Length: 206
Image (cartoon, rainbow, N blue to C red; front, side, top):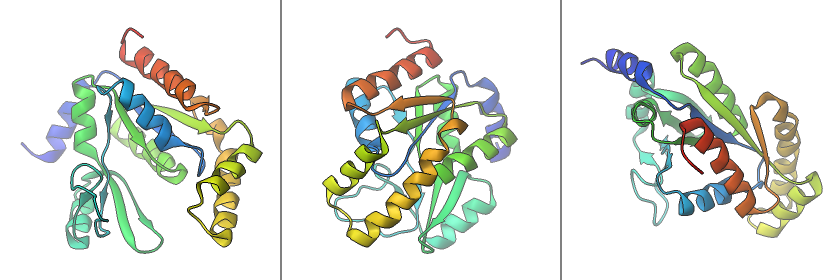
């Protein structure tokens, strides 16, 4: 069976909508997601593909799908990805489409965590595929709190923080584009609210 035919059959049979999760830098998307998964391991999170080299401890198929640039570009030409991007002008990143469709077809709660530009690309591609999504924006309690969190994690120098905060202002302004807004004031509460969105979407008792 061709990839195209398989995609058509799968997308027609899916039930719950794809949860597309985004938010500004340092808002804690990954932390909220990890908290959610610790309570609800039945949720499946899409694993991205990349052409960058694995970092120490990273596992192929768990952290990322690692592939050569030639392989990535060849698959991109075959519409193998839901969305793709080149990050920092170097490595390619992309969301494999078929695993997303397969999990949706089985009505398995499916999440794609992605940056703002990626979320916009997913929306565009989803319309082409007739794929339904629920877009969720994780927001900080305030801009000042976002600054505090970014400084507090201590992973960037002053110039990098300045650039990230400039980007964060643009990302925060995009919040009205999304279906659901969840304020990450406390991780537990935000994760529970995200589960509420998922449970409603997939017909699961809370």
